Image 1 (cartoon, helix red, strand yellow):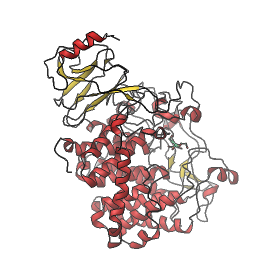
Image 2 (cartoon, protein in one colour):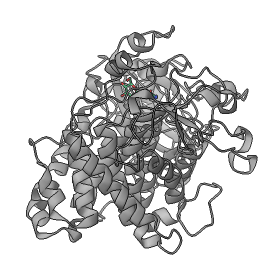
Image 3 (tube, protein in one colour):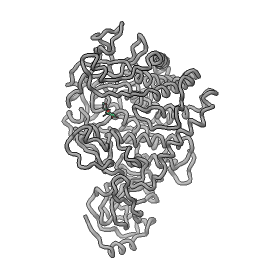
Image 4 (cartoon, protein in one colour):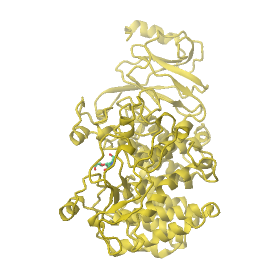
Length: 602
Ligand code: 9MR
């Protein structure tokens, strides 16, 4: 690291044309690349968009944007005033080079601090990430081989055929006694483990389908080199169908109930899918599974209605499945999934992910809204209290209420008069969430909505950032106010490196990325680099207590992250985290032209 005294700093400062210099300034002394004190989106920036890096330094002074060899100075500026990180107490300053718009690859040089990773300014800066994170789902496919043509070096044989899945005693019924089998192939592995869970599939597929409904034209151009690429469906829908078709097999045709999950009794070891051989079970039907299933199937029905020629009957099947699941839920409103109680009553014990939830009121709201939108039947709308309080909770797997508001606002032109009455309220809920997120961002050390509160740093916090981004995109779509779009973009910057740990949390995208995610194929495949396009759960204040992995070095909430495969509480990947990443990357790509100054309407 190079150090400067005050006088030489002033001298350097006087050489620079603050904020406007283009090529006129002399290069500041170059430092080694990849300074850990310069945090920025490690992919780069849109030419017409905001561009900032966060510098972890007490000292103010100049900075430059230069060619990667440091020889040509393209832009000179001055670091902002110091801001204190309210979580860690550390000092940060901003290097703002938004005014520099020329496409190319550059570094930032800050005397006394160092030089950043190389980054690029160009159109479509997140395009590869959008398709790469969609491709991440392909790599999660169960019951199929991944040929080299699509999976590159991560090709692998099929695992978990799931064509003879046992009915667990907790799920036994007259037509399906315990120990009999059903076929339930396909779907995505949930995460770093190989089990398949309906609740988590719900928000995941719902998020991907909502992306399609929000940006249909753009999504038709999004390709991911999957086996279905080139057919008449967009890749986003083809990939979603891989899981949707599996979800359909999780419904008991006899009564419409939906099994909570398809799972081993215990987690597999860190082996490749084809090496995992334990028995697989479907377990107890649950009300949360039924309602999440109903919501997603209703949404799928209206989307695939436009593809009746390619997929005859699918739209109708989805609608029928949704209605039957809803009716089952009405008859079984107390069938919450309680794994401990289940294990007391039945064998074998099941100790894999629970996705347990003691409150299904939000699942009722989401299912009711989607069924209403698809059927136009007011009876669904009035079956629940859509507004139990004035909150707008950020979507997550146990809390799906706001997904209902998103869909109702998106489909506002198709509401019945009953729904129309509530439209102002629905919009107000979404705007209230976005306003909370946008508020005070400029006072934050990292200038992002993510991390304003230490409570953002939970298990899967990267998806908190992504889901905040989606909320802000929704607000932008409703209001046309560019500041929401910019705030959404800043959370993407967070995910790609502008954060307190300096990692881009997406495997394969950025300079400093997770190399050891808790992801069985990435651990077991013998390939150094992990499967790409997967979002690590990221910083989690309680990770050390939760996974007991050795190696955490701090308890500061926004810094607890460990790139080790034992760190399943901070470094696993999961489908419900990848989906909002796909959403945000794609939405930003679709809206990038709206970032221009003076263009504030959508
Ligand atoms: O994402 C889930 C997180 O909200 C919970 O706190 C955590 C512990 O219950 O479980 C997470 O979900 C995991 C699931 O149970 C099993 N597959 C891996 C998931 C991601 O870690």
